[in-house]
Length: 166
Image 1 (cartoon, rainbow, N blue to C red):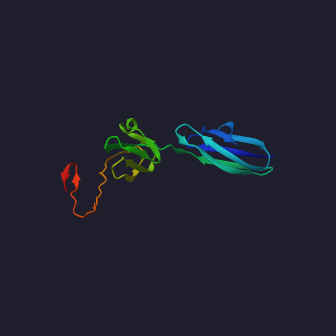
Image 2 (cartoon, rainbow, N blue to C red):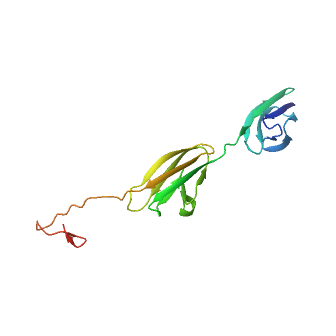
Image 3 (tube, rainbow, N blue to C red):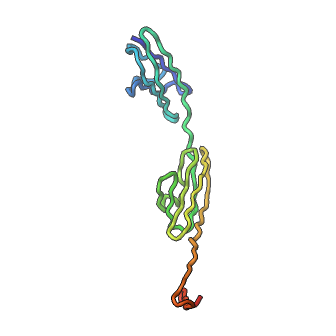
């Protein structure tokens, strides 16, 4: 049989799980383990969970010292969109008008923002959000423009657009 000694920092009282089974709080010695691979996980409030594979050998004690990283506080993205009824998506998630009326909480990283509305040219932009940062972006969609080419038979017919001769 073998054992694992588990310590953690900066929170020395992190919850310890071995193969997803709670075993107590660090520092902790888990004994009477059969030789083999074990998944050691640590969780603590305010820290990113840590997990790694540990090999246990008969008659040996494996030491697992894990450094916990503080959770990064989210950032916020404020959006101003015109036309107001535009469809808005952030990182693939569709947002309603009530969700875009106030700043959107996002994890740190790059987020794709897409704004679309019928009759307008869609816009997509990557926005970098840092921990604790507030970012504001304004999107004003441009109407789709086009050309109309009219041919007539016989040639030279009058063309009316909105009841006006063109």
